[in-house]
Each structure stands twice: as C-alpha cells, then as structure tokens.
Length: 306
Image (cartoon, rainbow, N blue to C red; front, side, top):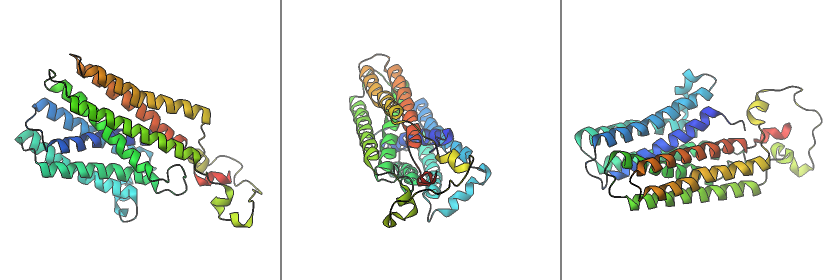
C-alpha cells in the first residue's frame, strides 16, 4: 500500500496523544495537586497531538470538507466509530482536564472514563485496518493490539518527560520509569511477533482473489490496463524484503532500544528531563518508521490482477 504521510502522522500523533491523556486519566486515582505549568502543558500536548493527528488524516481524503459525513456510518464502519469515539473522548477529556487543572478537582471517575474512551479510540483506529480482509498483513487480531500498546508506551514516555521538566526532579520516579520501560518492551515484542506472523501468513493469489481456486490454476489472459491508474498508485507500492528488514531494525533501535537506554540514563541524572526528551524524540522517530512500514509492506488483494 502507498504510505500516505498524513495517515502516518495521524496514527503516530493521535496514538501518543491519546496514550498521554489516558495516563493522566488514570493518574487522577492517586495523584493530588500538581503544578499548574505541568498540568497545562501535559493536557495541552495531549490534546494538540490528538487533534492535530485527527485533522491531518482528513488531508488523505479527496474532499476533506466532507469528513464529517464519515461519522454518520458508525453502525458499520470502524472509521466512523473512531471519529465518534474521538469527539466524545475530547469532550469528556476537556471537562476532566479543566476540573483538575483550574479547580483542583481530580475526579477519579471522570479520569477512568477519559482513560477508557482514549484507549477505545486507539483500538478503533487499529480496527480500521484489522477488519480489511483484502489485506492479509493487516487482517489479524494483533493489529489493534499493537496500536494500543504503542499508544500506552508513547503516552508513558511523554508523561515521564513532562513530569521531569515541570515537577520536582530531586526524587527519581523509579516506579514510573520501570513501568514505561516494560511497556516499551512489551509493545515492541508484540510488534516483532506481528512481523513474524505477517512473513509466514499466506499472501493473496489470483486463485484466492477470484474465488476460482477450486477450478485449478488461474492465469491472466489480458492485463486490465495498459497504463497507470488509481489502484496502482494507491495499492501498488512495493518495498524489497531486504530493505524492509533494515527498516525494521532501525524502527526497533529508535523506538525501543535507544529510549530505554535514555530512560536509564535519566533516572540518576540531575538533568533527567534532557535524557527523557531525547527518549521521546527517539521513540516517535521509531514509530514513524514502524508506521511507514505498516503501510509499505501491506499488499492489497487487487494487486493480484496486475
């Protein structure tokens, strides 16, 4: 599939933003009053990433001004459900953020609802791709799981950085750092299994695409087009296996190994916010590579005709 940069940015940015918002929602269970700069910046970044990602996704549409119509099909479309959940999440999250930030009311119930809605929205994003039967690589239950785990891990690293930058840095947050590193490891281990499963899964063939496999070998008598067309442009992207493996390694190194090393450096360091900021940047860079591969390696069944 053709990697659309607007969709890549959307999935990475909104995933991190919703993960951060979910973590803040759960934080209302045990965290009391926090410095105003920390609260404003944290919620501001969470909403900016989420809204910015959602807006960027509309640039992939032929008519962005009609994007609102997509939400009318929520009964049957995961894309529509994602939009509905996103709007509800932003409204509930905004109320939760305003109460906690400006009135010092950290409502545990509202925080839990915000966290659940945030994660459900990320799950719906993953299901947009997992429910497409014509793309074997995506049509697996691990696809939305990967989206969810990466969102949680990204949100936790962002929270660690902001916590170090705007609160008391004399007491290292060992527990949160450990959980963040574990979340990173789990997310990328699951992603490696996702890659391995995709390499082993059968790809679409002319026999399976046409449903005529029971009659024997299907061969092409005449190509459907003599020139390029929309399908070839959107679904005819190809990346060599050799290059894909190199990019996978780069994604893991940037998205997992380097952030974990930087978090370990940040724990005893007097300027831990610097290391954690670099960890955030490294993780996001790794996620951009991972998400580019997510689309570049996918092969739609329609390409069997070409």
